[in-house]
Amino acid sequence: MSDSRRQLISIGVFCIVLVVAILLLTAGALGDWLNTFPTVFLLFGIWLLVLAAMSAKNPQRYEREPFSVAGMGILLMTLGGAWLLFKSNALYSIALIVLVIGIVALVAALRRKKP
Image 1 (cartoon, rainbow, N blue to C red):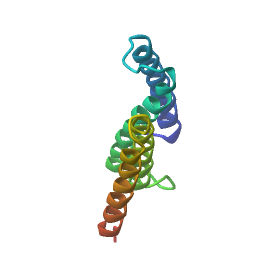
Image 2 (image 1 turned 90 degrees about the vertical axis):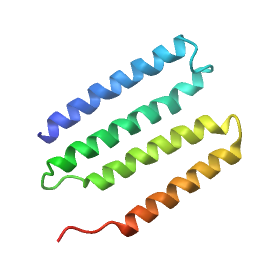
Image 3 (image 1 turned 180 degrees about the vertical axis):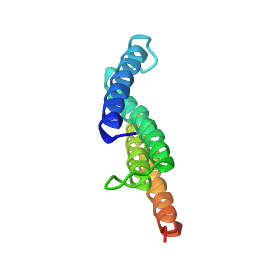
Image 4 (image 1 turned 90 degrees about the horizontal axis):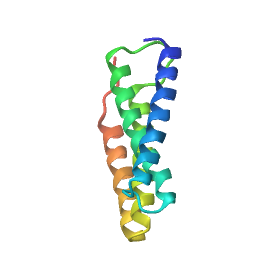
């Protein structure tokens, strides 16, 4: 899949994520309207993980490594989750961030480079 097609798909997915967040807000599932931002982070982070899996199957030259894209997705999901947890207990939010940083550091250290 070409880079321009992936970008167009990502724009479409972002629009769908925004619509889902707005629908969750109007249904009352999010509570406060400020919870739409971390919800968008969470959902778009999931999309980045899917995008990393897609690019791992068919890597192209001069594009970001799938590990890097997956790391950005995990970072977005962590920020969204930490933001949502911050309202209930800030300590849980900090613990989540430190836990994910530790897991990503372990995976990065144990991952093998392709020859």
